[in-house]
Amino acid sequence: MSAHIIDGKALAQTVRAELADKAAALKATQGIAPCLAVILVGEDPASAVYVKNKVMACEQAGFRSLKATYPANVEPAVVLGKIAELNADPSVHGILVQLPLPQQFDSDAVLEAIDPAKDVDGFHAENVGALMQGKPRFIPCTPHGVMKMLESAKVPLKGAEAVIVGRSNIVGKPMAMLLLAQSCTVTVCHSRTRDLAFHTRRADILVAAVGQAKMITGDLIKRGATVIDVGINRTADGKLCGDVDFESAQEIAGAITPVPGGVGPMTIAMLLANTLEAAQRSAR
Ligand code: GUN
Image 1: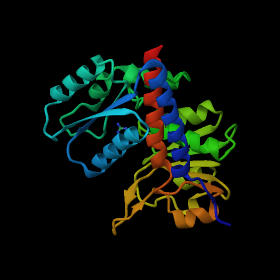
Image 2 (image 1 turned 135 degrees about the vertical axis):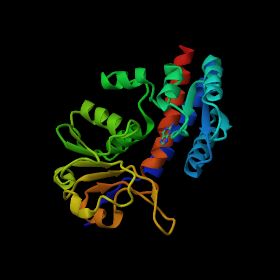
Image 3 (image 1 turned 90 degrees about the vertical axis):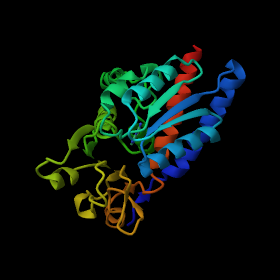
Image 4 (image 1 turned 135 degrees about the horizontal axis):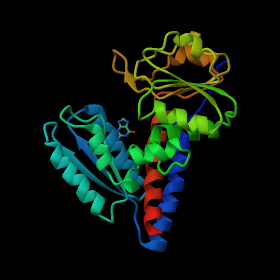
């Protein structure tokens, strides 16, 4: 039997329509248009596409957006100066620096320079700490989107075995915190994990966030499991694919997210949600 497909694209459209309504209400009642500022450094084509999609999503939801782009060899001080300017601008509610940054940057220092109240990525140490304490202020967009997808698919979380493959600050670690907060038993696997299959085959919920095309094959999945594919990779012939081998996985999984059309669209929807939240808080 084939798995239920969790349609992130459709869910994201619903969420974005709701956010557009709320943004219109904020504008009508308080005169505030939510505004996201995005900073892009360098010429990485994937990052450029992500940023373009984020800016477009803002426009469609009636948000304002600002985009600042810099060449790869820009002095970090210039970008830090821009962040200071955006921090001080009361009409800007969210600031996002697209990662990865070029080598000369200390990424942590850049993320720490963002006002935590405008850190809609949820990457500032203060916001990471708040999430860890179970009092999140901004939940990082990708894991936030995954939680919404699990909720919409009514996946039981309490006591479930959740296995995350990948330990990044952007996905793996915050994902672990969110699933833990919902009383999952959480295992985080990574490149040094001794027996990956042992862990993945016990997972009721398996989240793949490693950045390796099609590495999670059907034989690594427990029958009936929910499989969430965070990967965005390209095959040799240029097609988009996830970290999960969809063909073999869908035969075994109970529910699965596709790539494209799964987690990706939800990430952008949650970025808008965080930006609206920041704007609403600025009005209080
Ligand atoms: N690069 C890949 N994912 C992300 C993300 O969620 N936020 C930012 N700022 N950069 C990224």
